[in-house]
Length: 397
Image (cartoon, rainbow, N blue to C red):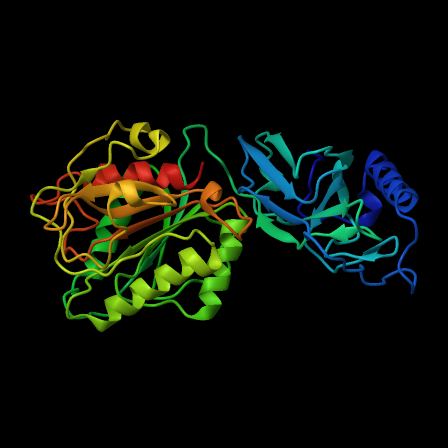
C-alpha cells in the first residue's frame, strides 16, 4: 500500500503514483468504445445488470486490509483511493476521490469470476493513524458502454495492536422499559470487563454518534430501543467498511418496546441484509439454566481467544427466537437451549455469506435475551464475560 500522509498536497504525490494514474486513465480510455458525451466531469452511464460494489474491512496498522469488488464476469477492475477531500473528475468520470488520488490496484481482468479480492498488509505506520480515506472501484463490464464506478467507501485508519485488541463502541440504554430496568448498569459492567481485557472501549447513551469510523465493532446494547431509519443506514455503512455489529433484544412479554425492537432486528436482517432468517416472537420459552454456547457455532468464535464451546449461558425473558437450530436457513446457531417447544436458538451469528442483497464485509450477532444478567457475569450467569470476549474478536475478523 502506498504511503499516506496526514496532510497531503497534490504536488507531493510520488512520481510513480502519477505515472500509475496516467496509465490507469489511458488504459480505461482505450478499453471503452467511447466516453460519455459531455467530456470531463460527465456522469457515468448506467446499464442493465449488476452495478459494481466495493467492500472492505477496517484499515488498521499491523493488520491486513481486505478489499473486494463484486461485479460481472470478464470485467476489468481497478481500485483507487485518496485521502478524503474535495472530489475531482478523473479523465471523463466524476469520482468521490480527491486530487491526490492513488492506484491501489491497476486494471486487472477477473476472468470468469464475479469479484476481485485484495489482501494488503498494513505495516505499523504511525502517521497513517487518524487519516480519513476513501476508496472507489472503476469497472469495465463487457456488457457496459462505459466504465462504471462503485459507491465510495469511507474509512479512517486506526491503530492496530500486536495482541489483537479491538476498538469497541458500546451503545448503552439509559431509559427503562417494562421488564428491563437495569440496561444501563449491564452495559457499564460489560464496558469495564472489556476494557479490563485490554480493549479500547467508548460508550455513548441511547443513540449512535455521527462518525463510526474509529471502531472495529459496535455493541448495540439497547434492549428495548428501536433505532431510527438514519441509524439503519449508518449501521449498514459501518458494515460495508468492515465493522461488526451485535444486537441484544428483550424482553418481549408485556413490553411493546421490546416487540418493536425485535421487529426492527427482523427488518435489518431480512430487508437491509437480505438473510431470509426466520425471527419468531419471544416470551418466556427459555428454560432455567439450560442454554449454552452452541456446539455448532462458528469455530472461530468458539475457540478464540478462549475455548467456550458448550459453555453454559443463561437466557430469560427472551425478545424473540430463531427457531430450532436445525431449521435455520441463514446464519449459524450461537446460543441455544431447550424449551417447552423443543430446542430453540436464542442467539445467531451471521457472516457475509448469509447476505442476499448486501455487499458488506461486516459480521452480525444477535442475542434475544431480556435477562437482568444478560451481559454481565453473575451467580446465575457466570460465563457472560467469556461469551462476550470471544464475540468482540469474532465480530472484527
